[in-house]
Length: 490
Image 1: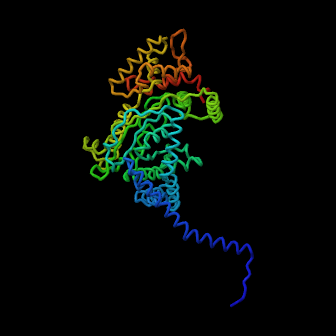
Image 2: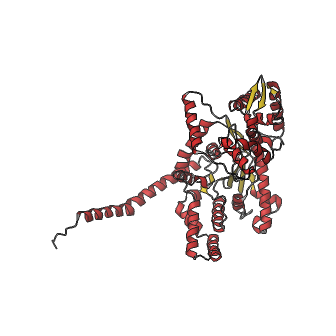
Image 3: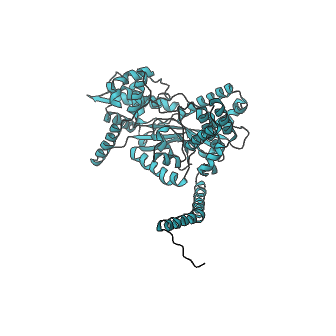
């Protein structure tokens, strides 16, 4: 009864450590997790009192719960069984594959990260690089607070994510679909905590597509505010592209017109006086025309050189922001009302008829999106000069052309950002930006397009060419002009 047991020091330390871990695991950590969850829920309730488009419970659900819910969804179980039969692999292997896909896709939203870190960084970066302006603003108060809202955005730059997050921060937290380029640590974790989900844009794996489709459909049905870029990628020539409707089809294919929740699309037009990747994008267009792959490549050396040069200019007081960046919000479009006008129910259509109906919806959304793209000084001057690219213009002739263009755009209902409400100043801003970058040249008081920069002039003109009814140059024409300088661009 009173004998002494002697233990080695390492065993005593290990036993004490295990005892401490057991106390933490069973008592303190659950209590701390509960306290943090309660505090997070109170923060979301406070945010929802200020946001018109509220943060839904689905968005703040623990990530592992969402992964399990997705994995054991009846549609996914059926897809797993089908995949196992078609490939001849065991069902357990197919289940593990689906689990990897689910974990890759599902985000882990943090309201603190989104509103205290993400939106603040977005605001500072946007204001550091641009003079940010908001154009047309469709009244969000018209939108049913219980609707699933989808922002439909044209894709000009990778800054689109940052700029729209900043501008829309007072309305809601937006969930984006982000490509594989962001699947690097620690960017991956930051993006995931912002509520974004990752997609493999070119995947042909049917099991992956089913998992992705089911997640997007579930999030839409739960009322998560989302944003999509229907063009599927950055515009290489500056013009709006034909829509790729994969994500939109996932959102609407199972829509119930008589259900409790409507789906509302809000067109969002974005434009910049200077797109940071402009030379990379037009260089990719040149490679595509030459038979290469239409993907832009970023040179690490050139990127570091660009950043270093920017800091050097800042230190010398010679760095300027890259002009204006503007976001316009169009009139909300109700999917329920759209389908009612067409007497259609997507759930009851044949696959071919449903695909055709969704394609029509996509074309309509792109038309409305095109109308919301704001006209900025650089695009106005570029489009005016491109009408007769070989001609030299006096300042009076150039201003006259831009004035005429403004009147045409206003007659079409387009939004024109006019700094200081002074049209002449707006034209001077556009001319100065183009002169600084040597996209146009001034010689003896006459302005002309720099022959080596016709591609970039076309790129900025194409941003608003559709508003004026002008057709952008054919891709081969752009690519042919870009080919000689493609290497310098990248």
